[in-house]
Image: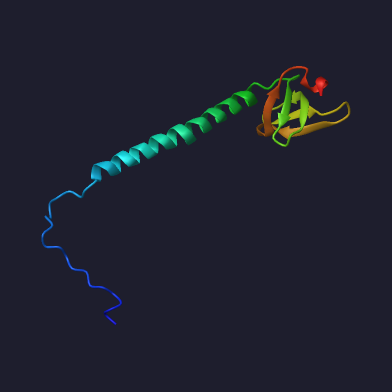
Length: 112
């Protein structure tokens, strides 16, 4: 059965104190990966989160907004965690502030 598993023999000619080849390249590769990760993933996501936090913090009565579900309406009441939006003349919806996806320019709802 020994013919299925080849025997491993140590190379006597290799110096024991020599550094492995390419160890500097591995660090450069790791740092490059971290820089790419920061520039392409973390920084844009942090920027979007900051913009959304500012949007939610600046909501006022009369603002026209779109929810993450695609419902457009006019803000008629703002509380700590919830917003009441008017979708039509007789329909008011109470939604969470974090569900607000974007603020629309004034007059957009009348133009639709």
